[in-house]
Image 1 (tube, rainbow, N blue to C red):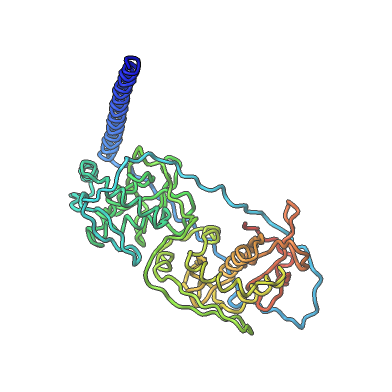
Image 2: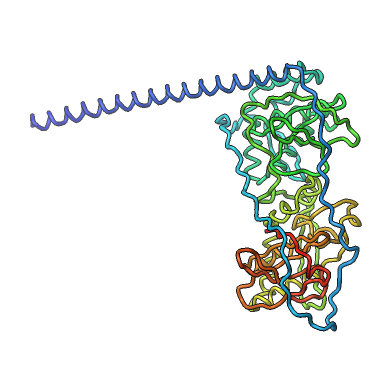
Length: 480
């Protein structure tokens, strides 16, 4: 019994000692966490203070560069029709120009943002963004003070907001960006929607300042500028933006956000970015923003087909695309269909191509794109050069050669699993498919030896493997 009692006492002592040791560990960890948070706050406060000092300095004058010209493609006013009665031409190897492989995906620099937890008690209001309502905690910035647009006014406004508890708002914004798949440009527009909701569309200065504040705190390289005695936003992008004045600061192009027509090219701004701002605005979209609301019904019928395709197109997504800056065709091409459009369209198209050979299925899709859509050039339909995003091709009454080529390439890749490239001629865009079965016809052959059969969605009635006569000796650039 004495022996048992001794064991119990020893065990109890060990438990007590272990408990005290665990408490010591917890205490040390809590102290470590507190020290880390203090160091972070000191760093954050220093970054805020340094940036406030930069804002107070006299802003420098920069001469903006003229906008990058939109690449114009003088497309034919009418599509070319294939003549089935013409003698069959011998298949040719079309010469190949430069090959544009996909650019290395832009990898944004990850920035450590304040560890913010959702504040359930914070009062939230509904901000409407392209027909979709988002709840955000705007109270800390609702009474933003901006007396004017002098350097001192701007610096005082920065100091004022940095002293407010803005973290719940920032948390809400970044959570919405992730949950609803807002790409960088959509997030930029969302920050404007918040400012417009709070201050009204006519209070440009406060809206612009709030955009700069939220985007800077979200890690983006943006800056304020004074143009024609107005406060304007400059954004550094990872991609070329056409038709917009820009200036170069520290080796980066900063484009004027929503420039005024006929505004001065004299731009006054500061040279230093906010310390935590490391990311560029990327125009690419790996996923399409999730916007709820209005839909527009569309029915498409290919010539001579005994089937049709009925679709619902998101009007809110179309409105968002309408406000997108002019950028490279490849950005439009690599942007996927919206989830709803993909599910609806492919749910109907899969049964159409089921059981067919690769050539038969590719020919059926080619005929669909050739004849189910009406043709007009961008100049006729919009008054300017505008490649469509894929969903837009199902919305607008007309489309041109680049829109058809991008749509056809996407259908073939997604429905048939085949590799497709775009052929960019001086005034035309077609497509070419790499079949894994033997298919004859006009083709291009890349340096890697892979052969792609030409399929032209704007050569109305043309079969797989038919190149327009005027392009059989023209070397197109290849877009992957």
